[in-house]
Length: 305
Image 1 (cartoon, one colour):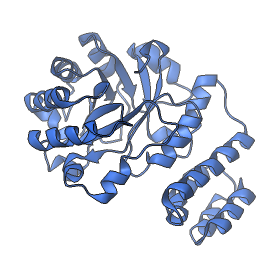
Image 2 (cartoon, rainbow, N blue to C red):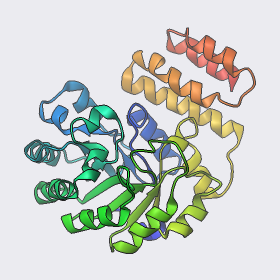
Image 3 (cartoon, rainbow, N blue to C red):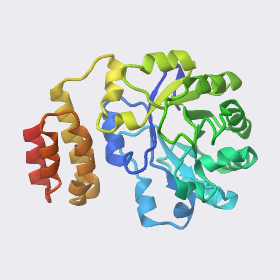
């Protein structure tokens, strides 16, 4: 399903950002693989309308992976069986990296790094019931202590086809430097493909790939406000201002298509990111915060970029 020999570029699942329109943008501009926002297995099983909407994919997304989170074996089994019925989903990723307190309190996300037996049992459950082409796990280097090799081996033993590693512990959240040595340690401990994640940029992408000996790169926060990073890494060159404007307009159109008029308000946070570093960005943000319809926002966008 994924050709790791080609060292693919993968969009990381990001709550509130990697929705269908954003994934459509990065797919159009050179991302090889997209993953949904994190989906709660509980919310999925109890068929929350909002959760079912989050599963939808763009026609550009192939392959497409859905990421689930949870810690209850029975609920995860039910969630996997529900996903089996959706033919447009190619793979299931299991979240063992989310550092948010709300998720940790449910013994899910990076809390599972404190209990590798439970983690292993849950990944085994996904493997046993899934009919999808791939099963993967995304995790951090550890909760407080760095044990990436042990976590990687637990995932491999449970049947994961590949793993993605954010080069920080849960304790670090998103602060401090990414520890690429931790990813290398995990890579050397397993035979399955390893994806490197954490602080990857246009400038360091090749270096991280070489140092970690990884099979792919996963980009998250660096793509917010810069979804063209995949294009830049692939083509080894920065993009033109003209193409930037084209991408921003394409993103806005995708938001309106998916969310209707609500897309105008939802797009504000993206325009805040897109405008960073531009002269007059503060005044522009102030204007778009007051835009209530698509036409007004399009006019502001055209004039500013």
